[in-house]
Length: 639
Image (cartoon, rainbow, N blue to C red; front, side, top):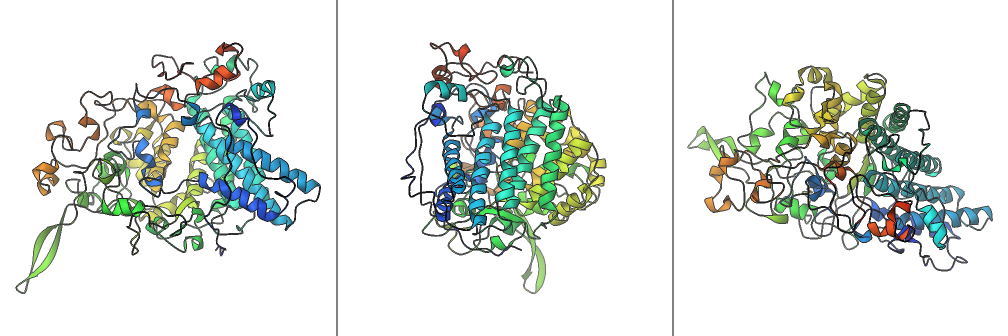
C-alpha cells in the first residue's frame, strides 16, 4: 500500500517553443547559471508535463467523452475520422506533428546530465535520479503520441542547433518499429531512475514506467502483426519509407521476430507490475473518489483535482444530463451475463432483453451495471391498504430530447465517472480523481501479449483473467465463454483483424479489455492496432431500444424526427440518421488512410530543395496528399 505526500496541481512553470519545423527556436528557461542547479528546480520543471496526462475539463469534456471517436460511444457530432470527405491535411498548430515537449525535455536532460557530471546540483541523489526519470518517461510519453498518430517520426535525442542543414537532417523520419524501440529504451531508463514509491501523491513511480512500457510494446507488436505487408508498416515496397531506406531490415531479422520481440517486452513489463499489485474490489469507486485514491493499490497514477486550484465538470454534465455522450448498443451487448455466457447464449433466463435500459443491466457484468444509468420501467411491491401489490414506476428517462453536450445521442448514459458527494455536480467544482494507470491494464496487457506471442493461455494468464472476472462479478470460467462464443453473432468490430475473424480466445481477451476500459479513452487506439477498423463498413451506430416500448414514456415533442431517428428506421436509436444528405448517413465506412494522421504540408516543403517535395526527408503518410487542405486519396492501394 502506498502512503504518499501531496503534489500541488499548480503548474509553476510554462515553457513554449516555435510551432513548426521541429520547434527550432531556443526557449527561455531563465538563467542557466541559477536554474537547474537544485532538485527543486527539477521537480518544478517536470511537473509541467503532467498536464499532458488525460483528465477532465473545467468545462465540458475530458476522458469520459474521448471514446466518442470509436464504436464504444457516440455524440451528436459524427467523427470526421470515421468517414470520407471532411478530414484534411492540417496546419501545424492543428496537427500531431509537434516536437516542443521533446525539445524541452532534451534541453532538460542535457542540462541535468552536465550539471550532475560537474557536481553542480544540490539535493539527494535519489531525487535527482527520480526527476530525471520523469523526464525520460515524458519524452517516451510524447513519442508514443507521435508513434500512435503519425507512425514513422524523427528520433531526436539532443538539443538541435538552429542551422537549417542540421534541422533538415534531423527531420528524417525513422521507421516506426525503431521509434517504438527508442520509446522502450527511454522507459527502461525511466524505470531504472524512478522511485518505487513516488515522492508526492500524483507523481510517477517505477510501476508507471513499466506499465506504460507494456502498453507501448503491445501497441507496436499488434500494429506490426496486423498491418504487415501494407503501406502502414515497414519492410515492404508499399511503405513510403522504402525509398529512403532501401536496405531496411528489422532488428530481429523479420517482421515476425520483430512483433514477437514487442510481445515479449509487453508481457514481461506487465507481469512486473501485475505480480505485485492486486485489483481493488470496488470498480465504481476507482472513478468517483474525491479523496483517498492514492491509498488504492490498483491505482498506479492518478490526476488529482482540488477546488480553487484545478477542478472539472464531469459530474455536473454526466449526473445532470447526458453529458454529450452515450454508450452504443454494440458496446453494451459485449458485456457478459453473470454466469459467463454471451447474451445470445442465455439458457438460465438471466437476460431480460433491452426493451428498457433497466432490463439490459440485470444479471450482467458489474462493469456494465456500474457504468450505465438505470432507466425505464421498474416494478416494485408497494403497500396498498395493507396489501402488497406490484406497481410500475418510471425510474429515469435518458436525455435523448436534448442535442449537444446536454443530451445523449444513444440513450445509454454514463454512470461511470459520476461522484455522489455533495457539491460535485456544480459547474467547475468537480474534484474526483482520474486514474491514468491502473494495474488492471497490466493484467490485460499480459493476457493479450502472452496469447499473441505463444497462442496459448499459459504462464499467468489463468491467474490474471480470473482476477478480472471475479472483480466484475462474472463466472471465472472463461473457457465456458470461449466455447459459447459465436463470432458471427458478436456486435463488435474486434471480432476481426484485416477483415478476418480472430480466434474466439483472442476475441474474448479483446472483449475483456473493452469492458474493463469502457469510457476511458483507449478504444480507438485498440481498434487501430488490431486493424479492426477495416471491418467498419457502412457501420450504423445504434443506441437504446426506443421504439419497442420506451418511447411511451416520452412526450411526443421530445422524440420528433429532428431529435431522434424514427421507428421506420428500426427500434434502436440511430444518431447518424439525423442528416440524410451526410456522407455518414448509411453508416461509418472507415478510410484506411485515416489509420495514420497526415503530416502538415508546410513541414515537407520547408525541408525540401526548391519546393520539390520528393527531396524532403519528411515523406507524407500513405494516401495523404502533399498539398494544403487536401483530403486523402481513398482509392490508394494501402494493402
